[in-house]
Length: 473
Length: 75
Ligand SMILES: [Zn+2]
Image 1 (tube, each protein chain N blue to C red):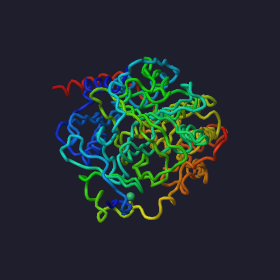
Image 2 (cartoon, rainbow over the protein chains, first blue to last red):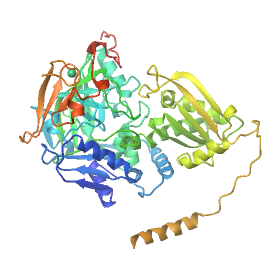
Image 3 (cartoon, each protein chain N blue to C red):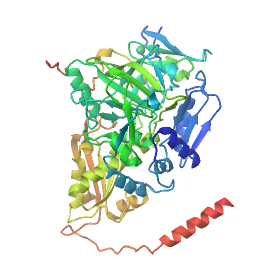
């Protein structure tokens, strides 16, 4: 589908999902106001900002993934596809892994090469995303690192999204949390006191951005997943100052090295739970070279109190791996909605193999690699409930939960440090609500007869077509 | 120059509008790594008006280290 950001922007434009702001603006606070507005609108479009004071000719694009319409288009679906339809579509594409990668000589991302007098804030139209951020951050970069001891593997090469704070002309702070894949690479390099090459890739194809924020296994390749989703080979190339593989059609690539064995103040930063993180000592990157396409587009995202663009990037890609891991041993699972704050709240639709089974599903979810620290509130609903339809989930809670036997709290389990309720940071708990219908030998206290849904699909289409016609007039 | 966040005299200019218009300048504190643009809102760049919660008091070396430096390995 999309070999780069530009081909996706063209598609968004054709579908009425890209708008341009051409009035002259100052980076702060206007860009954050635009980012907030774009994702608050129903089916909010991507926004290209084309006239930034002091940066003639430079462009910023926001909200590229920031609505279900844009998300559906990324998957090659109709922009009206429901979230559940997008979930099942993504599941199919997931099974095409591994897709192909293709090495490209003279990649577009290296059309312009800058090695001297680097000054990031003068070269890119950076902006402070939230008022109390410690500086300007890259919030949507695809960051590439390798295991120094496994330099030829695409599988252990990592492409991840980490927040990056510009801290000087050619200095960037990076937050790599201990459970992030990149932390393994950093630790191995630091044990040897060696700098770790790193490439910060900005403005890549939408599926790669999506995969960079997906919790896949350490030994799986984000490039091959992006290829599986796009249905075309992922074009990569060699970086100029290292052996790293980079997306050939990125808008910008910032190459540098993580300085070993030193820590510097970084943060705070408005984070995905909708609150600020703290100021911590973190690792730092020294930039060696910046390359970019001709007339580059700087893609970044606004993140604020949910929902904002980041929530779309942490939505179905959190659901799918969890679904796959549960389904392996529990075929009764129908769908997993773990879209809320990267899975801090998750809703699983499952049949009960026997009495109490749904609670076992919750334990399984709570012991998946991602679920251990993230999945805090776990809601189980029956196979007849669409977990992406919150009205149905609420009905299920209202009509199927008996608090004395269906609600469980497990204290003092691992937690997600960025969750403001995780105290001390890293500790948490599990809250399980079983809203499935009981199965024997569980007690079925009162028999209920559900109202059957009439066969309405035919009329849905007729009425929706009539509605479209009515709105054209 | 004084840092608007940690109030130490450790800040300096590091960037300016690349079109030479003088539209803005940017500063960085070498101690706490706070950066700011001179055209930002008062609540962000005026120490008197900043939310005290976001000011940085205390020593840098006392900040939490999220990924500790591992012991050196002999190669
Ligand atoms: Zn300071």
